[in-house]
Length: 96
Image 1 (cartoon, rainbow, N blue to C red):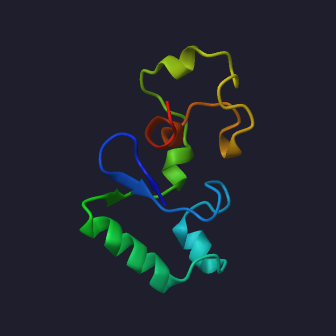
Image 2 (cartoon, one colour; image 1 turned 30 degrees about the horizontal axis):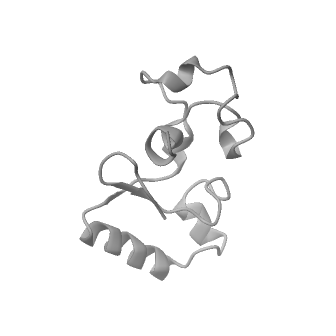
Image 3 (cartoon, rainbow, N blue to C red; image 1 turned 90 degrees about the vertical axis):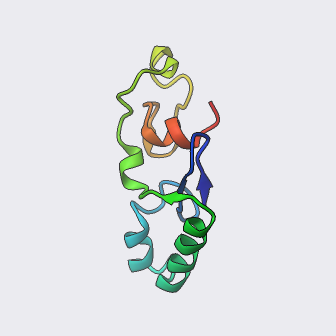
């Protein structure tokens, strides 16, 4: 589980952010039980967090950021599915 650096967003992944496309895949592939998923999402909601699916977070970030000024791949080279691109995951869940 990762809590966002900005706001009350949370994402649940297994065990690496790029190991499953989303929690549906993780449950289907046995990396997470449906009961555990429900408990985790309920706990996050009870604590005031908004669970967000992981898959859209791996899309390229199209907002304004100093990260886009870095040479391609310099900051996050080889990091999971991002391949050096600035993504929504990086924008909301990585230390900037």
